[in-house]
Amino acid sequence: MNKYLALKNTKQSLSILSATVSDPLKCSLYVEAYKEMHVRNAIKGIATIFQRTILKVPKEEAPGVYQVDKASTM
Image (cartoon, rainbow, N blue to C red):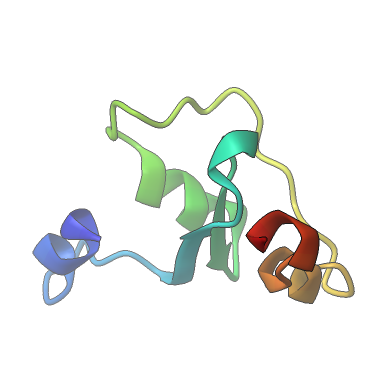
């Protein structure tokens, strides 16, 4: 978020739509963007993010990222 705000009104602004962590235990960060290059630019240089694997989530599966499992909230 800090990186996004710092670059917001510059020529280097991030071209992402959203970023979220679905489940901290899975250690996955979901970044929504139109191109993989935009995701790579957004996470580049952030020490706590390891860029080992970047996977595209199919459009039909994307809403499932935001669904809450009722069993895990109890």
